[in-house]
Length: 109
Image (tube, rainbow, N blue to C red; front, side, top):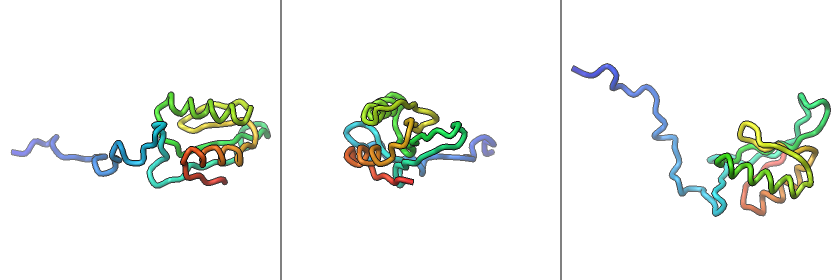
């Protein structure tokens, strides 16, 4: 008799990436097949502009370190929220140039 709990209902086996594929020397990598997106956001921010960088897959501390470098470059404040980086002000072109030099494929929206 077949065990009724042995059927696989959901599996991520075919969806995972090999650990070495796409990894760069700094340990950061873009989401598979996607570009790093850089966009300006003004919604729900009392009219203030925020540059939002999404699509970077990294451990928490690595993402915080990258955000620290970007904030220093832009001479602006910012934060890491929900896996994306927010930088105060409109710094899309500066962030785009910085990330391209680091080897990311970017798209400015």
